[in-house]
Each structure stands twice: as C-alpha cells, then as structure tokens.
Image (cartoon, rainbow, N blue to C red; front, side, top):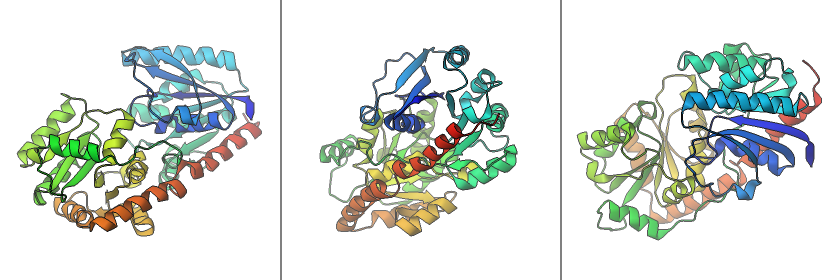
Length: 393
C-alpha cells in the first residue's frame, strides 16, 4: 500500500459525464493503494455514476458545484488553494487536462517541480486554442513530469513548449477489467425498429460515437453512406437533443438523402452508449488532416469500439495504419474522400457472418490482453515512483 503518499488529482471533467478516461489514472492509483483525492467540477445535475467506478476503487471526490463555467473555475481555484495549504509540499499534485491549466498554474505557483504532474490526452497544437495553450505551456514547463497519450505528440510537445524532458506516453485505453455490456439482440432490434427497418439480417449499423463536427469529418461520412446500399444505417450519439450539433447533423443527412437511414440517440450515459455500440457492426474514427493533434490520434473511443467487438473505419494516419496492419482492427481510408470512406465501410460490411462473429471475439480479447490500460499503467507508475524519489526544486 502507498497510503503515506497523498495525491491531489485535479480535472475539469465531470466524473459521471461521458467517458471515464480522464479519471482512469486516479481510479487506478487509488486501486493500487495511493491516497487519492479528486477535485472536480459538478454542474449539480445529479448524474449517476457510470458502471465500473465501483469496480476500480472508490475515490475521494471533492466536488465544486457551479452551473456557470467562470464561477466554477474561480471556485476550483479557491478549493485548490485551500487543499494545497492542507496537503502541503509533500503531496503530489496531478493535473489532468488543458482546460484546468490556468487554475492549476496560479494555485501551484512556487510549488516544487517534482511535486507536479501534468497529464493531457488532447495536446493543443499551435494556435488552435490560444488561451488554453498559453497556460498549458506554462504549467507543462513548471511540472516535473508531463504525460501525454502518444509518443509523436510527446516529441512535438517537447519541442514546441521547450520542455526539459520528453513527456511520458500513456495511451488512452480502457482497462481490461472495465465492465462492458454484452451483445443484446433486443437492443439491436430496438435500433432497427426505431429506424422503421423490416429486418432481413443484412442490415449494417454504423456507430458514430461523437457529435457532428468538421474535425470528425461528419459530412464526409454522411456523403459516404449516401453512396452505399440501402442496408447501411448511421447511428449517431454524443449530441444533446435539440443541440446545434444535432440540428446540423439532421440538416446534413436530409441534404444528402439519408435521413431515413439515420438515427440520433442523444447524449447517452456511458454504459448505455457501450450497450448500443456492442450491437452495431462498424465503428467510425475519422479526423480531419489539419494538424499534429489529429494526425497522431490515440482516442479513447478506439478501445471502446474494440471492447464492444466492432471493427473500425479509420483515417489513414500512422497510428491507425499501424494498428490496422498489426492487429487487423479495421480498415483505413482517406477521411477527406466520401468515396474512400464508403469503400472502407463496404469492405467491413461485406464480411460473411462467421467472420464478423470471429472478429468480434478476437477484438474483445485483443483489448483484454494487449490494448488495455493495465499495460499502460506501468508507465504511469514509473512516473509516480520517480516523482516520489526526486528532490529537485
């Protein structure tokens, strides 16, 4: 046990809102015996915890309740200052995500470098988000240890921010022990019935676990489905009902003639999202080729799709191409070309049923044995050991 080591984990994300990837390091450290306290925002919506939290260890969550973002950040700053006084300089301060860097940078002024760890899974490339980049650079330079989710992003971040050492790469993977819903035939029937489909067994459901966005090449995906047979259907999630993103998506599917082959599930609780993903046939990971961040993606949705047993259509970027070749997780394509996307979808959709079932089983095992957080955690633990052993200022 490591109960003598206190870790204050600070994040801008709600623990129960969306995927748990931001909190998996804290969950895992707690499970390993570290004394972890989490400072996190809370909108006051009374959201329920996602399945899996109880399995991974109970965190000491210090919630900052505020509906207004600016007020929330000010309250987070005050809480962090109080906790710094309470915890002192012997604790480790683990800051997760660029959007909390401004708060952490101010609150941790004067703290010894070896007491600060900065972790990001979405490196902000130059000038995309100038405000966040300003504070991220300063906190990363101040931190004794920086963690990022891709080694190529790590090299660029070191050069761009002039960091002393190369950030440690810890990929954004689900733990093998995370609870995943099984394939539920009734859920599949539910989706097809909602679409008004007379089921023949040849239907292909394409899950898009993200909001409509140019960065996600959403319109190109919709154009691609318009090129495919009538048995291909789009399933969208990640958009609140009535939101601007949902309105844009519905306009696009109507404009391209696939509104009758598109289903909008809204913003789902995480377990429900995985349950619906598990009954689809193909996942989508498309990104615009517009910078270092997207080009070297390592999204959490990757192992979500694979743990649910579905193959993936991905942008033809180095990381995805490597995984497609080594592990046969799906097919890459030119995400700027609807024709290329359609060809990749059709390649996966044309697999015989016995191969689809074999692939489902194989992909699930892959994320349990190989592409899992358990293997990544060893690198995080090395950072913790180094942080506890260093005495530099």
